Structure formats: C-alpha cells, structure tokens
Image (tube, rainbow, N blue to C red; front, side, top):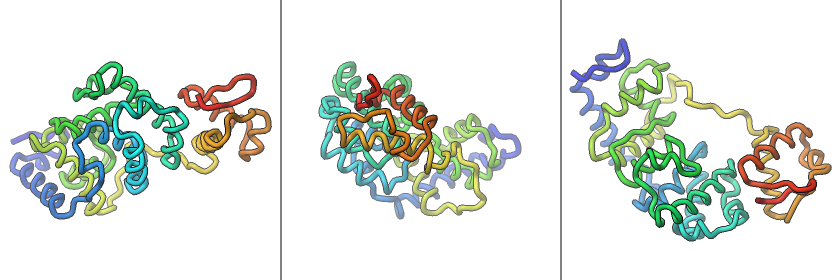
Length: 277
C-alpha cells in the first residue's frame, strides 16, 4: 500500500485506488477535453507565452490575446527585438503589465544565453525573468512532457475532492500526493485533464480556500497602474502634476502605483515627466 503522507487519509491513497483515479480523470479528458490553441502545439516558446498569460487570468480572456501575440511575435527572436510599447500595446487588457516586459526580457535572455532554445530544467527556468516555480514546472510539463507536477487552485480542488483529503491540507503534503498519482510519461495530458475536470465536472461545493486571493480591482493600485500604462501608450509622456486628479485617485495611491511601475522597470520619471522605459 502506498501510504498517504497526510494523517487520517491512508485509505484515500491505497495503491488500488490510484489506477482508478487516473482512469477516471484521463477518460474524462479524452471525451470532454477543451480544445485550446496552446494545446495544439509542442513549441516551447508558444507554451511559455501561454503560461505567462494564464497567470491569474481566465482562459477565455487569454485565448484571443495569445493568438494575436503569436501572429505578431512568432518566436523568441522577434519578441526580443520588440519595443516596450509594442509588447504593452498587444498585452493591453490582460492586466499585470509587468508580465509583458518580463516576457520580453525572457526572450532576450533565451536568445543571448541559450541560443533561442529555452531550457527544460525547472532549476534553470526559475532563474529566468518572469518565471517562478509554478510556471517553471508548467513549461516542463506542457512543452517537454517531463514527469514533474505543478499545483494550482483547480488541481488542488480535484486532488482534495477525489482523494478525500482534508480541505486544509498543506501544499507540501499535497505535492507529495500529486507526485504519487502522476501517471509516468503522461504528465502533459494528466495536468490538462486535471484542469479540465476541475473546470467542467467538479462540483463547486464544498468550497476550498484558494491558494491566493486577489484584492478588489476597482480603485486599487493595480487599476491605477493599468490606467497609467494605457495613457502612456497613446502619449509620449505624462506630467506628474495634476495626474492624481485626472485619474480620480489620491496622491498616495498615485505615488504607490508609480513606485511599482518604476520598480518593475515599466516606466521612468525624470523632472516630473513620466514615460515608458
């Protein structure tokens, strides 16, 4: 018997349940899996673009942006040559604009350091611009079919619901469980299947606390950052004076938004004038 790392859930991880669980999820995927453009490719560049776009953004918002992006920047080299204004303009509407700049910086690094081929090692990937542990593993899974696991809120929901785990199970323990049920050699299909099962078949109740929670957007620093970037894409520069009043926000929030944009290397400010970096 494969013993569960989670006290009180040994029966959920009995060896004879693992094949049943795998068969259920993969069978559902074969019958009901979603057709998405980034699933129709094995190109590491295209998959990396999709993974960075999908960070904290819904699939239906990503699909048209992904298609437009790949048409305009079909590979690492074309993206590496793009200007900040070009990538921000095409990214507009996805939010978290620093991801677009990070993606461009990533392209420059892949071209200069790796001759246009992104590594397939999570330990190397996490050192690259805009890539954290989740995205590093996701790239290895969906681009290279590596036998590694990654856990987002939806995958977590499936594992907890289907394996009878406690809703407050630690992420560390859940990673051990995820590795134990991973069908070897099928990591790409398995993770796609888990995500689709969560989106299309998993009951909404009982609700499970998400791994992270966003603060309200309206009136937030994030909203002000987005407004500033949008204005800068249509204007060469903006004057800091009276900008808070124009954006209907406070001086403190405007300064916080500007500080974040400058820190993320999205904009520069010289003598009271703000422009795209």
